[in-house]
Image (cartoon, rainbow, N blue to C red):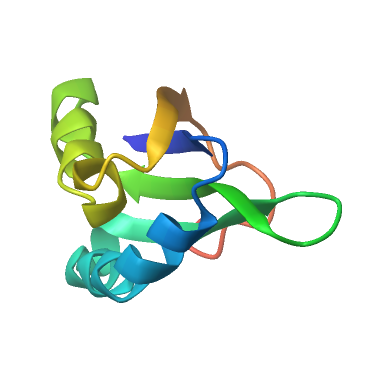
Length: 96
């Protein structure tokens, strides 16, 4: 099952985001084929202000564990994280 992790950074947290970014990227890479897509939300000026991460997990509990283990989450970067089941219908490279 796919889940969208909608993560919103705390205000004025760009320095923390940049400090933890290498660990965050390593973590995302460690998810292997469970990671379907990821990238930052940005302000109108282009500064990162959150993250969108699409993952495959057995259920919501497994998705919550994956979200909680992200170094950004562990560092306290996020003001909020929403976990929503998601169906990839359009331009899904894995669809037959």
